[in-house]
Amino acid sequence: MERKDFIKNCGLLCMSGAFATTLLESCVSAAYVAKSTFSGNKISIAKTEFQTENNKSRKFILIRNEKFQMPIVLYALENSQYSALLTECTHKGCEVKPQGDFLVCPCHGSEFSKTGEVQNPPAENPLRSFKTNSDEKNIYIYL
Ligand code: FES
Image (tube, rainbow, N blue to C red; front, side, top):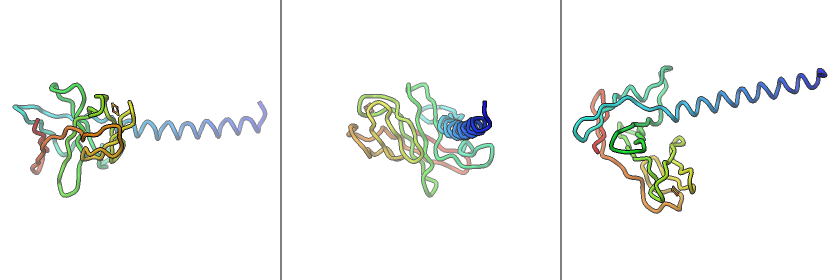
């Protein structure tokens, strides 16, 4: 291998490594499933679940519950408000994926805001949402 090709290959390798790291970081943050407890019709989640090990804030967390096949996504809004949405697309039932401040359906491309409103068809109805409230330590989702 000539020196020029070696340098070119090293550059490509470094770029792909950086891309893979970025991709993995975004996947890890997107796939974070919070610890929660379920009692009666109420799911309880510690507010600390929104913190990463590096003390950064997550925009959203996923909650698994036996009542639903698909997870609930919980977004932290402003003024200690939260938005809890079932990740089942209202078009034909695929699982929508949180992408930062909005959710995208991989099946036909519908997009929803972090409060569940349709931003892009073909879905016509908002995502199913759940009432929430919180105290000093926990967030509660009412099913
Ligand atoms: S099932 Fe989600 S857009 Fe069709």
